[in-house]
Image (tube, rainbow over all chains, first blue to last red; front, side, top):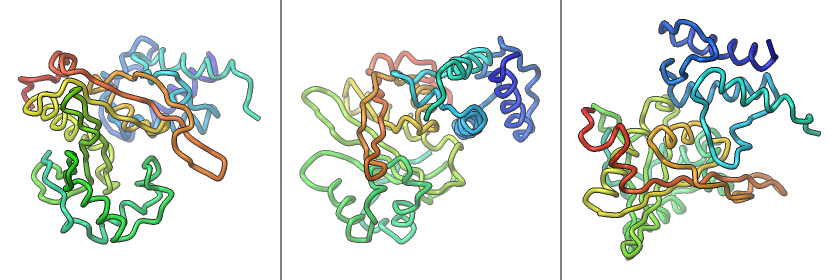
Length: 87
Length: 180
């Protein structure tokens, strides 16, 4: 399991547990839209992931894309892991 | 969600406080200038001049109280486009669907009675809330502008350009006939 995988699932679980709505599994195929995330949840997720991973891949895109599945979200951060650290 | 005309009488200390709040104005162009009653009045009066543009107060369902403002500007009737922008001043209403509700109304107006064919908006690349909402509503991210807003002595931020066409607005899942 990559660091991105571990951190993304942990952050998603924290946010969803705070919302106190049942969310089931967070496997890589899980559709994010089904989790009932709103725009504020999304902000918190991206900020928490930036704190943990040191990168905000959504602010570095040529065109703003939002991941469809949990696996897609992990992929955004795995790509960030491969980039050299910023000075 | 209700949009009501935002006029000089709504330029209160509360509104000026929104404009000067570092959390609220973090992604707004006004953030670098201390706003006063005079600057705020000047801004609002500009919406009631010769150039066609609109500013509304956004009130959540069941409330007559504004929690932010929405604008429709850069209106070009010949080419058929307009730009929109939003500010939610009351932080407790962030993430409550206020922006989405307002944009639904503005899109319906733009492509309905106004008969325009393109609506666009710009957003700070790190304004994930509005980026999420625009994407959800079917806006297309059409590109990225480099170093648009000054955010420090030698620092500038990029913005995303978002746009949606009339046919895309009507065809999206939440389009005309939605039950909400």
